[in-house]
Length: 304
Image 1 (cartoon, rainbow, N blue to C red):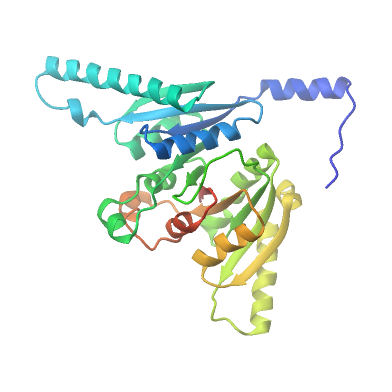
Image 2: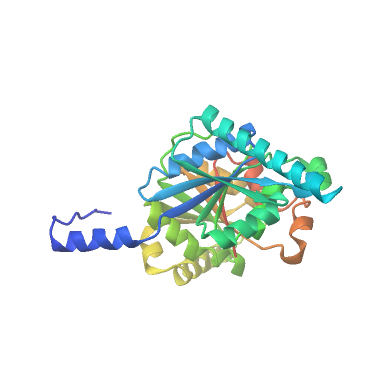
């Protein structure tokens, strides 16, 4: 694609004025001040090199610590807990060398409090890390990260245990889809993100590996191209290059395809857990969890 640059003039000044009037792109990074949060902040600050992008570090304080006892004791304990959290935030930012970053303290359990903060604060993107627990631990404890991205109204970048945060350029996205409604519903957000960060997009659909019939494989490839092009807006259609169908298990095919293309990130539409968000995070075989656990790339999850 050839990039055409307009010569300076009245049109350029008008475009600049329009850009200046837009609100900045807001990225929130939930933090518990542990190394995984540090990786997420490094990744977010890399994204923030795009002009008019702001990063806010957000820490959720669990009110359980000051929920019992006489009123005056509870108030004193709350002041102490919040003061310690603010000190920990300042120390974490300083040790990580994170500058030009806003901070916010919120109250409540991490996932519900973050969802409320996002809804109230016009957040455009969340960046977080997860350990992507193995099956036994996941059944017992669930995943706070997954609870957040299934509740959040905005896209969520999830860095799994194999991702190494660094100054990687955000140039190519791989959209993994099964063509279900929740997956195709992610395309408008994908278009916005691709436009914002000037990314090319490739598409991977992992179909039933037991389909061996060539006519049926051809039908599935044609169906995939038609549905993607019908659901994508004009800008996204121009950004989409390769639409690939692989007859293999998705948890293996998706990361493998993205690595072959040297992609910057994976993109997946995810279902909301609805009233069962927390129960959903305990299911160890959820596809998005397995992809995050296996992939060396960050995964942009978009709730459909």
